Length: 143
Image: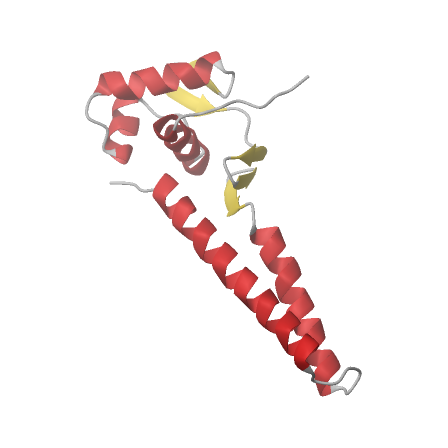
């Protein structure tokens, strides 16, 4: 069974807000936090999330229920959100460090292939981190 669900950008922002806050929020609180044009717009997105089983509604408002998973390039564990590529970034940074330590210890010699490998790892890391950081900031933009 495929649990993949497509969320629009605003619906995703509402869900991420509920996860980040970690508490029930009213329609007006969501509207104000995300600077939505009307309470009706907030209600629409909250109800969409409720229909998908991602939030529940109780007397205190709406609250996120599925807090772990991968959504639109963001890994969610409890209420912590990380760019999905954080793990790729960690891996490429570790490889870069291993290369540099190996160079310092004389285990490998500095030649053209080694320089290309280190530059490629650094370039990949910087590009991926920057791309995901911008995307995460855009998704989490608050008032």
